[in-house]
Image (cartoon, rainbow, N blue to C red; front, side, top):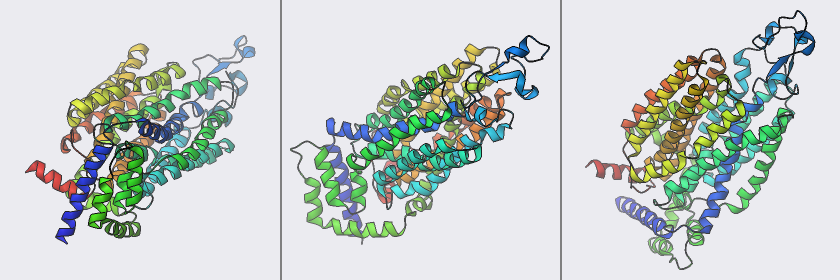
Length: 511
């Protein structure tokens, strides 16, 4: 038994070396694959922040007939204290769900239910689906299922007759998208060697930003149309993308190898490598008879689809890492989701506010790449969390009197949270082996999305009290940043494939 385990670890080391060698160069085939995989994040970004426009309270004005009479209607009045004849919406009554279903005087809790339902669906879906990418489904199949579910639910949202049906369909959409970002990130990074991992992994975040950035344009074009037009414009392209995903995206060779699909793994490596790449892995596996052992392992994994989730908490070192990245994900998510969702409370133009936040994400990507290649992951995450927290707290303290300064602090806090999220996401991929990597990344993601459930509620509750929103966001990311001290640095390391290999690697470092 010990000889078999030694042989297996040697083969895994050889696999890692061969992937490093075969993928050391980056050609158009790998680039095309990366584009196709990353497109899923574009549609994910659209659905994540679409509620900024569809669920907003539209602007209104006093009716012309009342302004010249004795009516008490003014722009500073509350429309809930005025007769319906004294005021009118600036645009069509179906511009958002608030005006369409007369929710302007409903409680902040009711108005926040759709956004919270979407993020809650993401949390539930992440726990139920995330581990399947490590076991029975694999990265590609789960990505396809998630994309189809999100896209179809987004399309069905158009037919919602009231806020309750709307919230239920948004929950399904969130449930579907729960595994998209983790599958995209893991799939991208497992296909290449360590030289290209930071550069390729950042594509997932870049395409998410493109989806985020496209929303102000789509919303502006449809500013005279119903909120349903936004869902139509974003769901149809997403449904068509699923066809490309099914037929042109390949599975992770690491996952295929770990589950006994050796020939498929070799075929993918050879197809994406240089024409003269020798099949060293194939010769090695055939000579040792490893394929049969891999098939046995596949059978075991399929009988225990949630084994990878159990493994994360069975070993002390894995549980420590898992809980740490979850705390970090929650704190970072409070700012990343809360700041854009709450820009309507800043008294600034909503189209420009969202556009500024989305544009600010773009410079965070080259900065992330530079940091990953040159500096410590741990201290970089800590630094960005602390700065983001300080800016968020100051944003709450400044108040409405200084709109320019306040929007500047909001943008600075958001930028730092975005960079911190980029770093901790790729940091997590390097912290865990292939057999549990997607599950660990999924738990990070779910804690991140769980924070959005709370932040969306705080945005509604804190519409008249900035500290209940921006102040809480800042405190959350500030204190969560210190937890990064519990993690080892992974700069310059290779990806491991089994728990034993990862544990042995850590023991060597500590020894």
